[in-house]
Every structure is written in structure tokens, then in C-alpha cells.
Image (cartoon, rainbow, N blue to C red; front, top):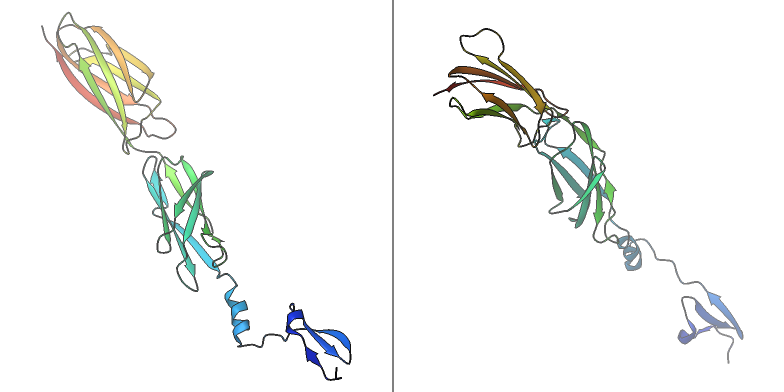
Length: 240
């Protein structure tokens, strides 16, 4: 065997094994040079960063009105797949990202200030990094209502009854109390006064047997934490 250096490829395991002057020596592999194919592979292995933003369709809405939250995910390369987790009032909802956008329709948000956060989680975490948006918010105010009155038993000798209904403008069901004041036309003073709590948005009152004549009922819904007050006046006639 000569004194010249020889490399045995069968013994190379990441380090080159060199026989020099009868002595085994380990030599470190050459470092990848910038611009080489091996250096490009290292760069390609790094996940692409992402950024997420979130906006809401309105800064102020009435109770029961829907709000739309839109999250947009951007990257420096390609369009990532994955999902956005929206959190509104402590409730988390996951929505798939399509063409860089995830949309959530929010209903029944509580009255007051509501904060919306959005966090993107990529399907392939080796290709893209996740990101979180700066939170945004919207405010829910009381909803308008309308009050209706239905009167039955409008003949002398029959028992007359009245049903008060309060209806939220956004298909919500008001709670709270309703008040009914009954007067007979042409007669001074209040004939009857009734008040009670609504159940499923309505309240019935028994007015008893009324004499023949025209009556006026003033009905007020007194509101609750989520609904504004409303009022209506209705006249009806009791016949023989």
C-alpha cells in the first residue's frame, strides 16, 4: 500500500474516511456554496410566512341583525389552504379558507361591544406558516320593536280578551312586560288597566264582559335588555 491518500466510498457516512500514510482520518464534507443546488434545497425547505387580517361588515348593528366577518390570508408565494378560527364572545368557529378568504356570518351577538379575532392554521405547516390577525370589534345596540293587539269576544255577554304581541325588527323574540289601558269612548277615566310579563313574545289579558259601545286600548311594550319600547293604540266595538 502506498503512502498516497485514498478514499473508500463504502466507509463514507456523511464524513469521508481517508487512508493517509496507513492511518484512518475523517474529513468533513464540503459546505454548500451559495447559489449551488444543495443551498437552494435548504432555502426551499423553509415554510413561507403568512399574514392575516379581519374586518367586520358594520361597526354598529341592532340586536339580532347579522354581522359578517371576513378574514384574508396573504403570503409572499402561492395561495395557502387551511382554515381560520374566528372567536366571537368566547365562541370559536372554524371556517375553511377559499382563495385566501374565510367568511363568518355572525348572528345573535350579545348587546354591547363584541371582539372578533381570527387565526389562520395552514393545512401544510411545512410549506406555510400560520398567523393571527389583530382583533376587530363591533357594537350591538337595542333592537326596535313593534307592538300588536288582537281582541276577541266582541259581543255583549261574551268574555272579551286581548293578546299583546311584541315583535323584534330582526325576528327576535322580546321579553319584558306589556301594559294595556282600556277606555270606553265617551266615558271619562280608565276602565281597566292590565300589566304582565311576556312569554314567547306575547301576553294575554282577560277583560271580562263589556257593555255595548266603542273602546280604545292603549298598549305599551316596556322593553328589555335587548329591545326598545314600542306602543300602539287600537279601537274596537262591542256589539249586541
